[in-house]
Length: 214
Image (cartoon, rainbow, N blue to C red; front, side, top):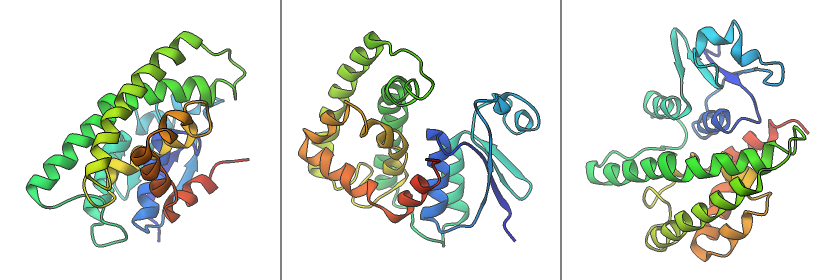
């Protein structure tokens, strides 16, 4: 019997982080689709699962969580014997992974999320682009990817020599950015480009993409 429930939207980058982790760990789960257009994430019963009214929310038996990165960490630790190991045990290597986890959440994601909204979601909702925001954040991402190119010239993956949550957490924003004008920033850097091709080709990620409605 499936005890895990993910309440979210297949289009949501934060939701995609969680479902990608579950697919990597080969764990069955029930997906509860929250209609964002109708504002269901701001209403009961969802608001009881996440008082901030943001997807996703997560249940594993009597455990209830929100915040996607906290959820992915829990999944990998709780189900460590299943599927892909997405964290590192060695203390020094774990520290390096932790460093790049911070880079992803405080540098990459801060910029990428703004670009995903402008270039990925605004067209869906027929909202005009803010070209100033796009230009500012494209320049910031360009600088961040210079750091990534150096790191990936020294290490196959950002967190180390194996695929970890650090890499996985980038996948949802990459999905949208690689379908926009921003893809040139990734494709112009050989190590970054190879890394993107590698992680986006993972079978678990293809299952996440298959959840997105046409």
